[in-house]
Length: 191
Image 1 (cartoon, helix red, strand yellow):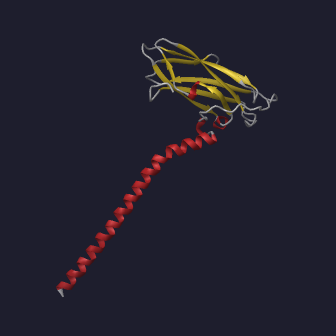
Image 2 (tube, rainbow, N blue to C red; image 1 turned 90 degrees about the vertical axis):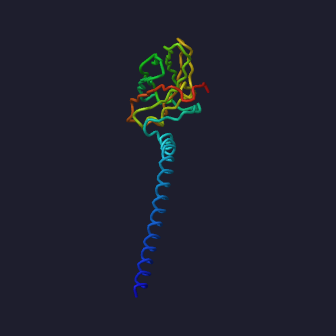
Image 3 (tube, rainbow, N blue to C red; image 1 turned 60 degrees about the vertical axis):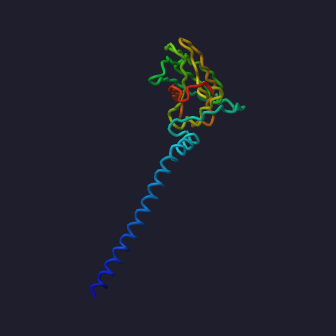
């Protein structure tokens, strides 16, 4: 009789061990799935922002120059702001702080960058637009932000931005801000 009780207890312990092993496996798979999802989230977010213009992110490729009709019935004011991140050693600013334009009208704005260090410095500009709805409607034809920019010690450089605002911009948006933040380039070479 004692052997039978011991056998049943052993069987219950084995069942409990088996259940614990199954639970541990499930938790490990859940952990692995969570880690994979976390790593995939950044590229998915970037694609979503680029497609929708959310978070002020803009497309980093040149817009195809189309024969868009200029909407002369309204004006849009585009303001320009700049930031230089620590460690870059540049002065960076637009020649004009804002521009008033008709949607569909192509404009060129010049930005000035100056290397204040005694070494070659490579930077990369990251654009952001507010309000977010305007990001999908600001079309860059030519932009210094498409590639890394290298400046020699003390060099000053004019950097053009050629763009237009799509006539499809919602009518209630009459002001937008295009902001550039220059970061030290991760790879440190000009593309």
